[in-house]
Amino acid sequence: MNHNDLELDDEVTRLKAFTDSPKLVAGITLRPLSVASLSWCQDNGVFDYQGKNKIWRNAAYAYLHSADRRIIQSVVNDRDAFSNAVDDWMDANFLHHDQIAAFDSTAADAINFYMASTTTSSTPSDIGTAPAKN
Image 1 (cartoon, rainbow, N blue to C red):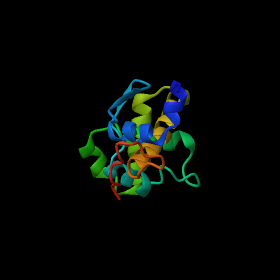
Image 2 (image 1 turned 90 degrees about the horizontal axis):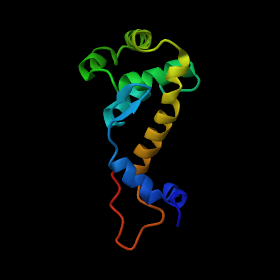
Image 3 (image 1 turned 180 degrees about the vertical axis):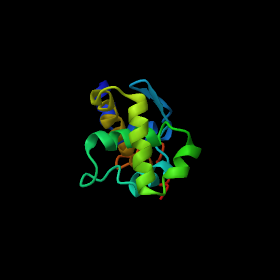
């Protein structure tokens, strides 16, 4: 078995999800995806490909996972205030849109790992499978 086999195994994916830790991406430390941040992403169209553009969605994901939680909570339930907060955060943290592109795969990986952690393995090992969270 080589390294690529392990990356594709759903049990390894689940393990990664359960042990996710903060990550440094484009100079920004991102907290792991959580129930609250997933809810905030959904409420504000961060994963809605019919809404805002890709640059804004990536920045919104990074904002929700790096800014002070009290500041996020003060704007997250008001779509206009949230959108303005993301715009201000982009202006304060980036000079070029290419810097924000690094968050695209980070967001995709985070949601995949999060969703993997909420399910049971389709190929359980001999030692058993942890019960599903849902």
